[in-house]
Length: 246
Image (cartoon, rainbow, N blue to C red; front, side, top):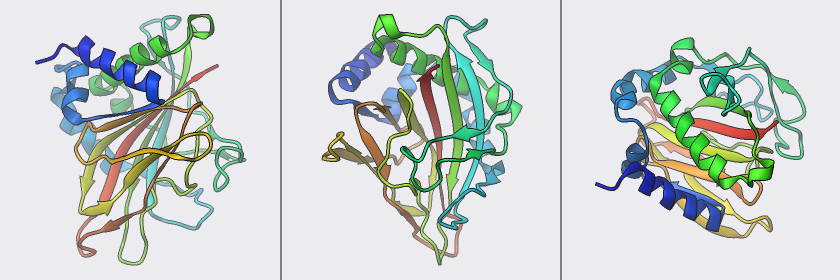
């Protein structure tokens, strides 16, 4: 089995070259602390307790989420520190649908914020993104936002993982990690350059499948999902983590 550092080096080269990288579940798992993933099932189960996103300008009722903010980096005691609750804000330059307002979401539960699975994911992101950032512009403390998303299509409504369409998030780096996928079809991620030309596409299908994005270099979007059997529960659960220089 390849060493974690080898996987991280491969990921770093791909991200540097292309501006994005798809990482399959096996490679992602190899980069994370195996002891921290022993309680993964409990971590994933927290997606069953998200609040409804009430800021959907399209009127949709298909998105549930929780939100948290962290300070992460060598300038933080213990490297990771949760900040007090604060709103999520994007300008309309980055989110034409829901941007331009402060959005207060249900906070991430303490058990999730302190979970070893989340900690190992954050530490891996920090190692990768620090290495991808020019030393002279590398902050001592990153502003990190965490989003738990559940997208639920229904018989009368598609689920739209990126209702704002093809977009950038207005940050430096983005991780999108699949937590669960049940009874759905589609949900194809596409990556485009700054002229919106297609660079690649893939579908997150297994827990821990992940996409890493250099937000300054590429756009990303995900196609709408539909329930395979409308009579059964259907959802796409993802963890989204963004790193931004303060």
